[in-house]
Length: 149
Image 1 (tube, helix red, strand yellow):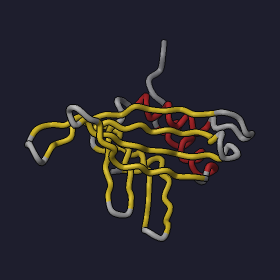
Image 2 (cartoon, helix red, strand yellow; image 1 turned 90 degrees about the vertical axis):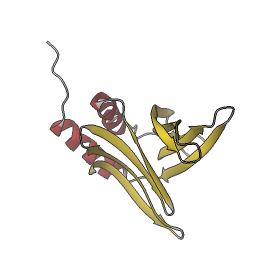
Image 3 (cartoon, rainbow, N blue to C red; image 1 turned 60 degrees about the vertical axis):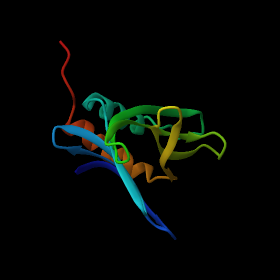
Image 4 (cartoon, rainbow, N blue to C red; image 1 turned 180 degrees about the vertical axis):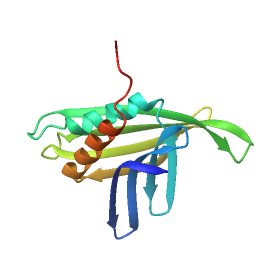
């Protein structure tokens, strides 16, 4: 995967990351925890451009702010050899319960038929906003999107 927008950090358990990158013909979000990682595709490049713009628009002053994406892909079920839907939310925002600190948050879910199971949760608190904005600006410059006539 060719990373375009990424946030990496380490704690006592190991390395964590949220990375958006180009993978073949599509764009994916890779969520990594010390013992587990998973990737899930964005619906289209426009969704990645919206993410980049949300990072650029992140307010400098404390105010309510959150953008959220719903991502999904069928995931193989090893137990039954069938496909299980795999869903995730990815959010960029300012936490109103914590002095409006910036965050990136990923939470995945699995449809288990009669129940929904929680998957991986990766939260980047106090991400390097200036670095993420520079990455977002570079992405929008490199991949400006379709021109409208």
